[in-house]
Length: 309
Image (cartoon, rainbow, N blue to C red; front, side):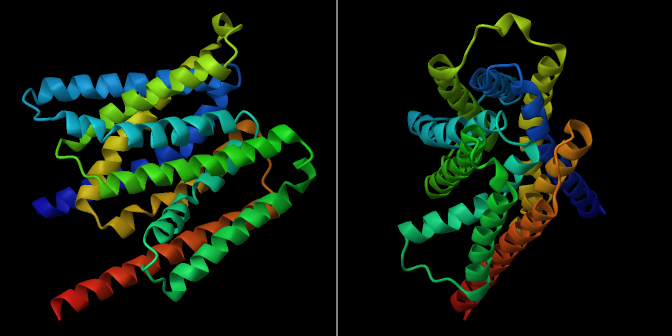
């Protein structure tokens, strides 16, 4: 009975991740319409990091850590928070939030490609190869859908930034997987938020226009509060909880649902256009991610059977 209750909580946590992380693109779009984008992200991540770290220190007063553990959070913080999540907020100034979410959903494909470059002995099966091809085709469909905007340098720049953000998030993910810290995972996350937020403050100093900083509307403030407490803190805690209780393959379903939530919210609340190509790109990219995930699950089972034989 206890295990059943735990499973229900884990599934509820996964549902929260699937929905909440899909809504963050809309909140980004609302916030950066008038708020300096890098400053918006910096305040979000720094606040989330300080709140999370303070809570951990209050609950767990005797956290054991070393400077090595702290140093291991620097690159993930810069790659995933500053250059990954942070610059997406800059991208949605120029492109629809649903399109940004769709492009960012390809992050698992980036991880595979980078891993292939690092470990060339790693062999791919048919599912992974087809999934990678579908992901590439999905990007081509996105460009076909937006071909009339390709003459708009800002629009094209926004697409490019969204794709670059996936690359950096994948780099941070791979680094974290290969360099495990011995400290509490929530402690690590809070450090990444703070380090990444610091990086975004630096980018804000270089690139943001602060002239109208005193004219921020209430909608942007509420979007910021939502992203701090719901998007960052609640979303991340639910993600870690689901990951600790459910199979990784099941938890990865959020990558399929997030872009759908973002696209629908953008259509309903911001009047963003959904074309037949948008729907087709969504189906193709999500199918690609599904096949890649399935292919890696097959490889994992094969390795386990080989070890146990």
